[in-house]
Amino acid sequence: AITTQGLTYRYGRTLALDAVDLDVPEGAVYALLGPNGSGKTTLMQILAGIRRAPHGTATVLGTDVRQQRARDRAQQGYV
Image (cartoon, rainbow, N blue to C red; front, top):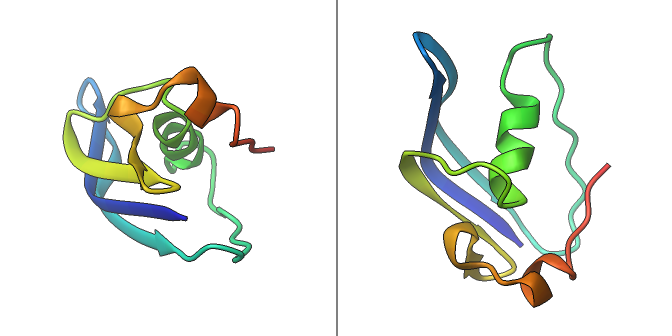
């Protein structure tokens, strides 16, 4: 359902995501755990199409997050 490869994101000099590789199969439930500032929200924003990662790729339900349309996002949700 979710795949990322080499996903990297910086806030100035701060590295929020460092080449994240993730594979979440359909039907699985995963939790993102970590201290404040560890990149959890940044990852979710990239997967939701709110932010664009300058490096790496991410797909949700088989669609590249950079090419998602409103109908693609309507099938997604996160808490």
